[in-house]
Image 1 (cartoon, rainbow, N blue to C red):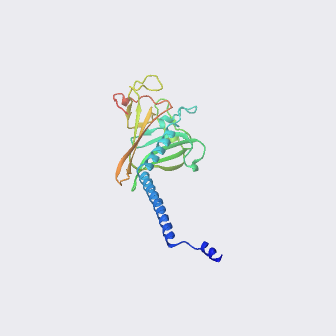
Image 2: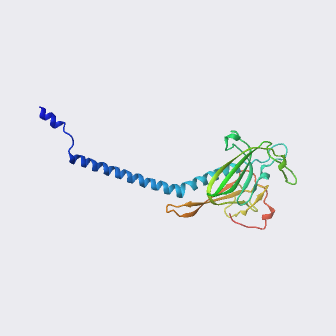
Image 3: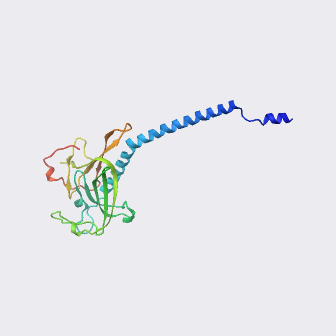
Length: 250
């Protein structure tokens, strides 16, 4: 009986240990290879696609919310947020009513002056959004001349946010339709007229272009562009006289 007990309690043989070690090594090698492949894919994807796409989506979303919050015809006096819109091909300033992005400016919707500008840094260009609370509300606009009384505005707290980084280009285009029919949606054959600046007027739409210097999976840099067009719910300003002799395409 003692012999049977001893035979049942014997350990693994050297051959069994070698086989088990080889099997474990094969499993671990396969797991490491799969992990390394997944890590390479994640790194290449994050470098080439995800960051620019995320920045572009955030920029378009914030710009659309800001632009569609521009107030028109508020108050007993002549106040018009359209007259406080100013823009160039690479900057934009407007008055909008929305919730501040920075909690220190408040949580409820309020009237703010919002600007988008390009800041140049050592690591590349950044698109910076600045929001400033207007304590006195909208600026007064002269009903005849359309002049904006900027001195009548009291500014409160402000906050800045880097919306997009690694930019190679940020471009804005402002467009109207000349001789547009009285329809909500313009016909496809009618081409808008575009300008690269506005001052105290709200166009029918704004074209936004973001271009990034993004690194591909091969370690090379190539431009990656994103475009969006924001059409307004608000009534646009009249067609500018300076554009009457121009015909362009968006």
